[in-house]
Length: 430
Image (cartoon, rainbow, N blue to C red):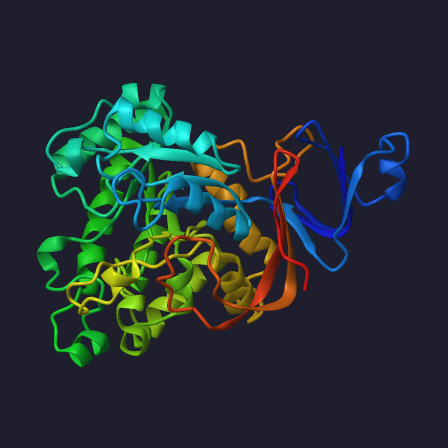
């Protein structure tokens, strides 16, 4: 048995935000109570393990539904074991992997490999499967079969599906299966150089860049298809103010629409690409201050209901290539919570409760995961963090270190990560 005492419990799924103790038994939440007498000696055996969480927040384990562990095929960047360690250090207890591996997750053999390898870690690893075979955008995968073998959703993340008819058929099938489609919304026909916003940044580097219209046009198309098919649609890593407005309008029309914000998109603008080069190159790119503020407003009013990292490891050698040749993406699992605390909560943009909701119960509900809550009987997946402690970003558990935040001072330090009632990460003392 495990008792977490003296912490400030934040459990948005149950409307809890206050000092309370959490009792755990047999890997499940036994009780959360603000009355010490309710978790008395009768409940606690003499050998009960106790964590004193005084000065810390106790919350459901974080849930990230947009992660790349690069396994199989690109394990020089990351693998499921190192990715799991990075996630646990960041306070995440459940992740959903994207399917753009090599081979891609478009067949039973690969999805079985990913799921079984995930089970060997301390992290709860789920995976999407591909929407189209080979991510080629021409033929649908056997979606029903892949669901039966463990897929929790479908995506060709990284490669937009340009055939609207094919996408509509995929949406219809996914709606019937009751699982989400998660879409990367960038029309490649409009992009000269990906990863860099067409504007101040592209002009600085003398390249064509990626215009905002590339995202806007596909979001607009796909929201209409979602309204038609009633699919559960997740707009991934939204980056434009117009995209936020389109999602807001679609939600008002009653569609089953969700949207992700990545921490880098609410923290940085295209100025970061000028400062950090390839370490701030990502798809979709960092855009203007008005876009960053619109994303924050989308989080405030519920238009954007999920914060997801798009954790995208790349090797140092790959990121040291010239800007137009280096791959896009940054790691994010170990900085997501501190960025949320520092750039949203600490600046009065979002309450701590709202931040935790976007990183726990909302993503868990989107993918129908048994996670994101401290309800009695739920898995005892918990993060304990000091929201006031300051860390200097670095010393990553990830196999890669491609982050523009390295060396920055951010508030929020994870002290413990607990999965099924077992401490699987504990920060070093001091």
